[in-house]
Length: 496
View (tube, one colour):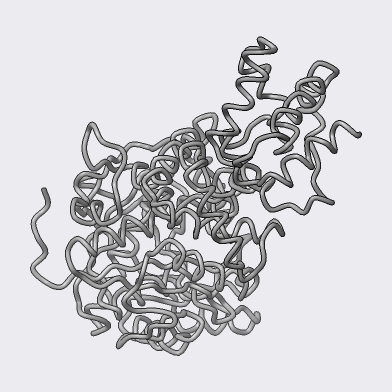
């Protein structure tokens, strides 16, 4: 187990508001959140919105909404504030400009006038000669005359960081000791020629000024770590930030189908899709936690409180984790079955409202019917959205009630209609409309008198009154639907 930190822990989650959040991004947020909650530190939520061409307010609002939905609360950041803000990079440009100027003045950065074509030509030559491609330091030590000559040509320089000529070694919290030789980490650009700061500058500057102690992020950013460590050292020299370099931990890739890295374009990647389907936040987070971490070798189901209590970064597996939709659904189903009836009812209401089946706000009779139906579907559901098909028949107006055509073709042929007619006759004389009386009437008529197997006896009736072959238990469904509506649907089929 890793040693307990000697200073207050501060971690950050810093997404860019471009597109919709994906499972890999939220897995990173979850591990940061669990790590810092376990240690009693501060969770900083920062927005990296410096890509003007791709950033959008819609994406920003969606990201905040998803974080709130998942319960990943933050201590500093948008809508909360904090002492080290602002927490949107678009509001910090003056800070980046100042730090870049200080790095230039200290000789830790320099102006580079090389054009893209020149860089490509020199890289091609290096490859042809068997040398490692990368920036060759052409503009590291320009004379005043050379600078004047470039200026006369109208060239606008970028600001490039001067990397040290030594191997950079650090201890990765997930992967152990890692070293990068200097020939593999060349001088890199901090500020574009138009003055726009790049991620390579703004991310470390913000981490330094916001006193971030631990950086937990995806494995794809591992190669940028030696650059950032060198920049932290340079900022310490010029007095930017606390002077301390964060500890880094790089989380494993999440793999999709075909053992390829899960991308934003993969269907199982979209976080919003899980919300639409009706995954529980606690169920989805439980599964995402398993993508690289485990609470115990023989246990998959746990609450977020239990995760926080148990989470340590040294137990994160550095090997790629494969996303398994079936397992994700199974874990969500386990969390669904742990809900109380009242809780389940409250959670399915928005899905019934979205389908136009109940009012918004839901009426007291509708709520009572949902609560009554909840125990019938609790053990049958994988996601909340499935409630629409399972109990929608209870709320659809009779004039709009329809039967699934495929199910009707399978169960409501001539023999099926005869079963429905017999069921109507049996139910029409039931005096007390409750589950035991309904079951007795149907079993007596269809199973005992007509000698039908239960599957053949009750399937046609189920389709006739619910519209589908799959529904909550038939006798309880008939009781909830009520005598008048049940007989009406049976007779409608017979008339039709």
